[in-house]
Length: 450
Ligand code: NAD
Image (cartoon, rainbow, N blue to C red; front, side, top):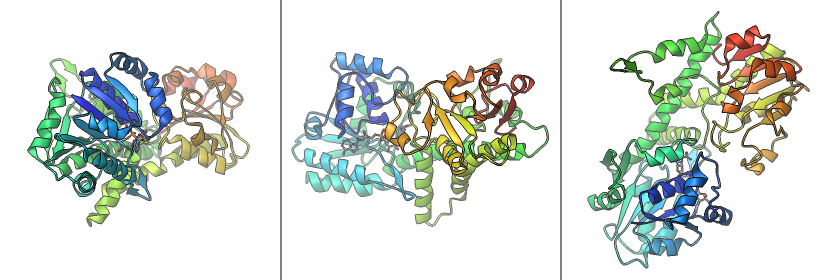
């Protein structure tokens, strides 16, 4: 089938590559000329393991290309995805990109004779596809629903595993406005052995928010337990989670093997959740609940715990280094919100860095992606020094804070810190180090939940 994708960010490009791999002909559309040029030169505008290679294969096979020309792409396609951003602004979902894309698609559909299905992949609140996208397309296409189809297909990919997730989806949720829309859209997954769940539009929309809110809840719950553990003698929250994880309701036995489901990665304590989805989606959901007259006290607490988690890091730092951080050199390892991505949106590193700067500390940070891929504009606003190597960052530092669990940091030994730092204080925000070997080597080691 011929597919147009409006918005070539993480979701748009990864979806495009995975659909091209299924043999569909995909046109990725973006308003950003630089992105278009990069994609057509087989360079992904963002980092994801293996993405450039897969992109090149699809370009070489003629199954994917990128363009700015939305109308042309829609006119030559059977299905158009909307994968533009839906940020949260002033605690509310901002639908301006969605409205613009719907209008542009509507205008293009004015010239389309045959049945065309529009699929919303962007995360939108219940009611948006039916109440905002449908009337906008109808207005500008001068067509009524039925002359075109409309589905809501939430995306569940995880950055850092995005290609793998998109190529091997665990489920496909198709919210359909009517049966024909769902049927036409489902054809693109005809070759994929996966459970397809057909729902109405609002159910699909809420499924996405419920999924993100659930994982965010597990993280904030784990951080609340960590706060309790930190106030008890000789309790390490890591031992607590080991005991919890082995519960057969979380880690069932299959034959003689006890499996370790992915959900356990969210029942762990750390610096909190970040990224382009959990923070904005939990906030948008909480505000939406307010509008419905629902208190949403769990979701609001989840957000509050997360927004204050950076203070725990500062607290641990002060316990080790003393209250006065003025002129202290603090190395911050990791700026991306998690490893294997170059996405710094919502990263815990930034509230930590801001708190350090407000106390007049000197911050030197490092990230394996900092020079190659991170958006310099987002970093230059902060008065931080970016080290080009981890050695440079920690040399002569009064303390090191680990924010992101990059493999490069996991490999560091206590000796490495002792040899280079002015004072061997390590604050492990992700609990990536063996506390016994760090403590016995003379490191002043503090970690979340310890
Ligand atoms: P992004 O900001 O990385 O990309 C959006 C792209 O859309 C940008 O390149 C922008 O230039 C382009 N765009 C905006 N309006 C356009 C228009 N009218 N015409 C052409 N291009 C346009 O966003 P993203 O991270 O890919 O997220 C997209 C949506 O998917 C959001 O709703 C997000 O919540 C959701 N989502 C994201 C993830 C994720 O991990 N990033 C996972 C699941 C769902």
